[in-house]
Length: 429
Image 1: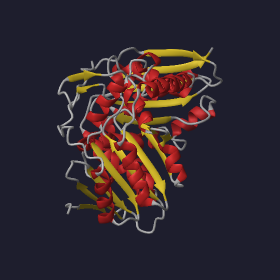
Image 2: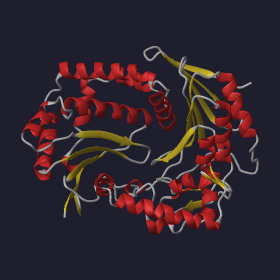
Image 3: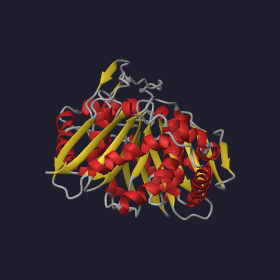
Image 4: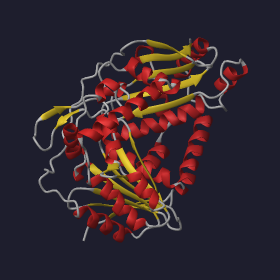
């Protein structure tokens, strides 16, 4: 019998049950009474930046090509004589996967056939099928995908901002890699990455919905036992991080493309922080964005009325154990003027007291949004994944939001300096 712990949020009216199976796999069940839809997720703490590590089967340091985590995600969907997406579809179940900088997650959504979907998801992950032929075929498919994104101005302006900020960190490389890098991927390297990062102690299983907790945990465990491989060690995963200079790589990157509206990304490269601070930074930037850049802000109204912007000004924070930055993005015919205005405005608000009334209003709004979002199963599983990757309590974010002060906002704004700021622009040819 597995020991099951429970975490509860009174504000959200939600409980999450968690246990660790005998093989080291972390299981999280977010109980949602009354919901017909159920989401199952099988993920690994492995993403595009994890290219330098100790091979768990040989205990030797290994460097692999950029894009291999994303490539591996694609290949796990392909089975001998079938595709996992088609197998789920025949069951009437929706399924997909994604790879980010620091995670790869496979999931399904269903209202029926929940037990069968759990079995299929485990089978999908635990039966890798890599051959020279299907690897070569996938190189062509992903190569086309990379070329497609290279023609996407939204994608290029974002990654150019990362390339301007970072000089060595693999976060500056497209998650899918490059056509050159994926040409060096082999079935042997795929098995090396799979055996290392898809070992149970590096993975997690999440279920969100109105399910029986003990039955679901037993169901996951029983299906996993069918694929036990005692020959693969259960060592702690050891990754190597690039020593990234605090200095920015280059101040500005300008690229010409066939577009109508030029695009702008302003980036601020920040110091690395721990998991709790990463989540706190995300919340603070969310508040700052609403206070100073939302469509209700004085600054946006001024830029809109002057004809400089006609859509939105977005601000977000991204962080992990290897990178930390803020990105501000917008579109404008007068991209240089908007950039100048945003940079001057940031310097201005850094030297102004935080409007306490506005801060409290936005904070209450964010708390209200968090409570309302408890009806969204997708928000619930994202909260759990954030807690796993950042090693925090599942409901840490709601507590952090309640405890953020205007002094925290003021301190964070002070970190947005000219010395750590870059610009990325996509302009018309």
